[in-house]
Image (cartoon, rainbow, N blue to C red; front, side):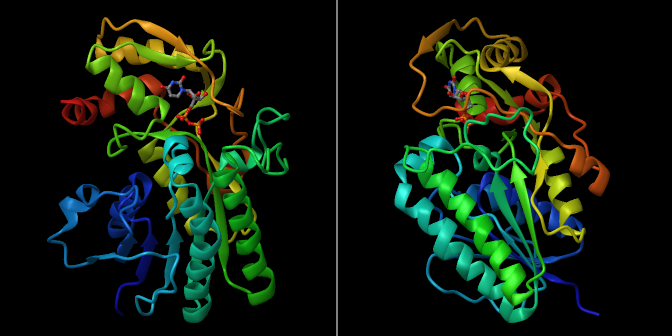
Length: 312
Ligand code: UDP
């Protein structure tokens, strides 16, 4: 029997490329597609001689077809606030047109489907920690709405294809994730602080740094995706680390791990920046037997070599 074929949209991105590695490890033949708007070929360099792997540069906002596949992993979308605000229209298109085209492929070939959604669906949450049943508190017209609403729409479209077209879908709500292959300049807090610390620049803490996030190391996150891909759950599942840190605490951990003498400097808090974010992972635990293993300090240490090389 020939091995199953998986399509990964956004395969040259931070999470997409790690997912390609994991799927090859699971015995899939992998086709990665990416328009390289925010993804980078460098993330897939190590696979260039692997005959089980195929990369195609294309834009999923146009209809496309890479032949019969057994699984569609839809991960294409700018994902850092700096990126999605710079590429607002492309982000809205990835959530709508891109998601439609990815779902059409799953429908055409009877493939299973998993979409990367986000904790941003919860917006600036009024419920804490966030359970999958929480409907969220999102500004539909604010600067982050190009991402938040695109992802909320892509969840609705996914559930629509599941209900009306019987596509075998899954939705993962991803919380803040970090690790090697993150772009140094994508503006997210971990690469920003690592870059600043390693270059001896001030760490820019937005606001007073009391806002919280919960950081998941990339290997834990990918393990959650693989487990969800094998499950029959169609409703969204949170995958993220439930240990919550203030952004100031995160800055201090980065200083400790890098041994940097950089100072902390406060800058204005961006509009609609969520004040707190922490997943309730009861569902992932019970349903998938999943929970993260790597704490923030360990994950930062495991990422250090990558960030050192990138910051040079
Ligand atoms: N942040 C910060 N300094 C930075 C980058 C980000 O204080 O140099 C803050 C940001 O305001 C937010 C948190 O860190 O409260 C996480 O931001 P990120 O862009 O990583 O992702 P988000 O969780 O907001 O999507």
